[in-house]
Amino acid sequence: MDAAFTAEQDEIRRTLREILGKRCGPDEVKAAVRTTAGHDRELWQQLARQLGLPGIAVAEEYGGVGCAPADLALACEETGRALLPSPLLATAVLCVPLIAALGTDAQRSALLPPLATGGLTAALAVSGPALATALALTGEDASGQWSGGGRAGGVQARAVATETTDTGWRLYGEAVQVLDGHSAGLLLVAAHTGGFARSRTLLFLVREDAPGLVRSRQVVLDETRPQARIELRHVPAELLGGDGADVLGALAATGRTAAAVLAAEAVGAAGQALARTVEYVRQREQFGRAIGSFQAVKHRLADLYVQVQAARSAAYYAAWDPDQGGLALAQALEALRVTAGEAIQLHGGIGFTWEHDAHLYFKRAAADELLFGPVHRLRAHAADRAGLFADPAVARPREHPAADPTAADPAADPARTTSPPAPPTPPAQEKVAV
Image 1 (cartoon, rainbow, N blue to C red):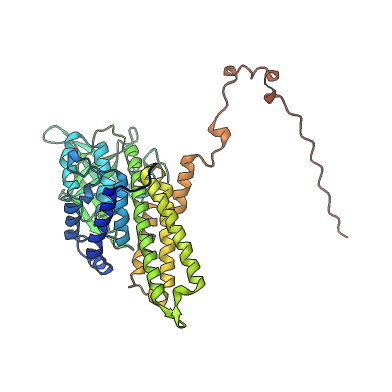
Image 2: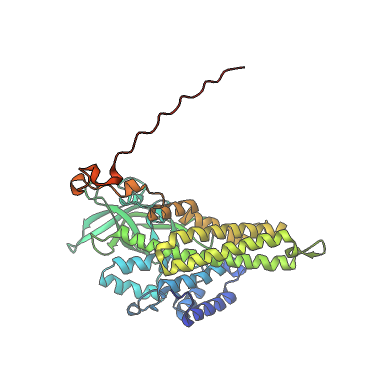
């Protein structure tokens, strides 16, 4: 494995950092999130035209750049440094891989080019606060119960006959915590269908102007990740791919890649929060000297540096091997949370004011853990997938005696001879009051 970055990757990082440094400062971020779209549309188009950012991991045949997901993770590390509010995560990280994996040839040809050029944005809508479960980040759900399971509260899909005698679909229900759902031109809605006999989860395409679709932006902790509530009232929809598509498998694969990208993004935010804190303690003076010269402050910053660098290494490894994305995401989210909290502490009284820039990173850390975590569940699921705490006797069942010639004759296998019985346990001594 060659861990060094290529010249193209270094150029992507340099160009993106230069653009975001000029157009995405803390004041610009606060102004952009308060717009109707929740992001700077002009900056989004500039990133799409100059860098092809939304299509960086899309094949060239569909108008993309044709890079690997690792390049997308590297780019998101830079967007994380600036806390860029944009539909990049919802469009390029969550929806594009699903359309590429499940869509028909006609759907890929019609949707991927405008998504790759930034002319169209998309959002993934799942019912309830179940985004981490749907992406298989915090647990496996082979039955897809997170999509509603035929009960109220989810999104239900019903096949209907249209005027052209083709089978159409109608969706009914609601979904909350839909990233950029209020401004996306295309919605990928996970819905339950089939009733009890053929219960399954499918993905459907819903246009922003579909009749019966109601979208409302929600008030959230982290304004740089705008979320929306989606209400569907017999909304016409188009099935993504075929009726027998492996939707749960595609969502799990997308979740692994998304975890690696989110880990890189969190590492970028943690690194920038640490850098801003180091710069502050160099300038802030107390008792006639910079507070960064005190040994206690040095120790705290050194611990943060080690934690951020360890999370960065894990994120880079996950970009190369997405199967390790969940564990890398857990480490990156923890590093961001600790670093953002220490940044507020080390900024002193001014850091505790709600308007200070340090709170932007703290809000991102808290919101990401609510959306894609928590950290302990990410680690627990990674341990379950690796079989770390599996019982060897259960994981590897014994063979049938008929298949083992030594099973009938214990003398043929000395290891199977009966061990002598254990000596009896001596009775406990009685306590006598003196």
